[in-house]
Image (tube, rainbow, N blue to C red; front, side, top):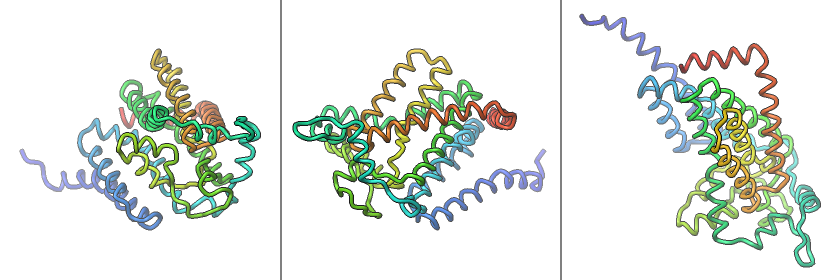
Length: 311
């Protein structure tokens, strides 16, 4: 017995129309704010593909929409550069870094970044490049594991991740700051339209004959958002939830990745020690704040609703 077309049509429309409108709205808003980029079509294709592929992939993309929203907000920061709202800190941050963490080198005092700039090796270029490449994949892989194995633990991780990023974004606008490589290239003069730079990570690309980091930093949302180092925040979140979920020996791996990313950020001149410490502090504050919010009825209800939605 055939179903009547009028019964099928509203069901199909109700499933297709909302995501189609969201996708179109995203493309139009992106074009208006940051211009058209092929990455936007890739994101739309990935989201729509997973949403319609199967019931399980639909639940997966709904759960991970938290991370997608973060990525979109980060991308849109290009439309609202932080240097337009507050003074960019260049010399003061450099001098404070040298005062607190300066390393004697002959007759001068160097920042840790300058010290490693004078002591770079190809082996460290490879190692630090690999550590830096892991800063997004490791959190996403761990989040995927929790989504599959323990969904009630996935959402606290994802929401903590977003909260820490929001804290970091606020600081970006309150305290715009340059990365160490900026001082190495331009001194203490402010150039508002400075493009992204691979800095010490360029050697990784050269040695392996790839353009991994050059393509990443060509799309940098804001050169003047070095403080705090959110690269340094993410592995702290992963290790915290790894310990909380009793991941055993895997936590040793998470700790290694964490320390490796911290060192790599300094070695490659992408962050000062102060940036790294600020990133660690953001992660700790975000974790503590989320744990306090989790005691509230509304957040627990939200997490339970999300779990039911993707069960």
